[in-house]
Image 1: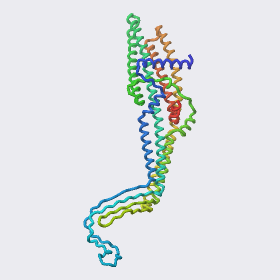
Image 2 (image 1 turned 120 degrees about the vertical axis):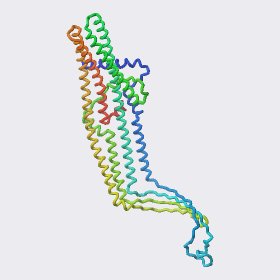
Image 3 (image 1 turned 90 degrees about the vertical axis):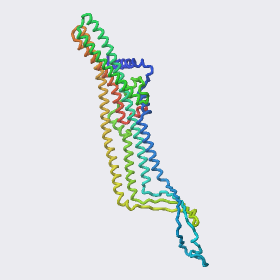
Image 4 (image 1 turned 30 degrees about the vertical axis):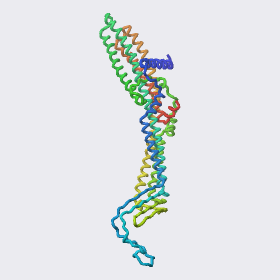
Length: 453
């Protein structure tokens, strides 16, 4: 049996083992890997949190843009006034008699209240580039937040693949152990008949029964792992946690074409969202330096206002409109701004260092993921060969056992080795697909490949 035929046979046998327990579950939901990824992305709580962060960053950008708009304030007061002494300092032009204030007799004026209202409007013209730099910084941070969300999406996709593979392996383990347990129970029945007829020692029967008991315990553990993996997968999918899932094993056992290590490193630099995000944050830090330096400059604004005043029995002012320009400069900024500029420059240096650290980590991640994938592919071949060896070993041991050349322990050990070889091969196939997608993730290609499937 050549390598390709054996691989096809092993995949067929595994699919049959996985289908058997599912057929009894009419309510089981069929689920391919792509459907699992799509549902996880749709219902991810992490991505909903990322979307909220985008909305916050968008609102912050809107706030920064709105600083260009004029400020307007309205104020007014009503005042109760006690009996004041009123004396108008206005030079009289009346040659006739009368009071000493231009003929006005103020002694009869009774003032007990006053009301006024003020409307002020101010439009910033020059703020030392603070508004412009603030808008640019908010724009860069908003882009960085969106890129963070894209990076989070890749993490969610990889988590979906990991959970799918874990459920696949758990279900495969249940199927293989059940098949092995069935053979073990049949052996116990055969050994029981032989022991009752005096053709087998009691000790050999006990060894077979012990193996069957151990397999039952192994099956209990495998079923528990399967149930927990099923619950975990449902939580990611946004489905009721007890929904039974029928996996499409063919969609998991397919890995895509592999490129060279250099191509993956180049793709990571070009496509990874966290690399682009930290680049945007560095631009925002540079804009922050400009913002800090804006305190060195004066602020210039156009102003306009309206004033209304009413003092009953004395004076009433309406239609008092003011228009002008104002300049404001804080002299304290001459000795206080330098520290703020140094802080902004320090933050820019921190971002630059983080960018360099990230680039180094990416190279390491790509190398690790690439080697893990190559190792996983080699493990598949090794375990496939191990299955052939384990089957042949069991046949030889069984033949020797039938001819009383080996003990019952040797036969049982050969069967356990055959089961372990099959489990290792199933796990290696699933792990290789996970490793391949991990390689795509660290290279920034996972979302692209997922959307193209």
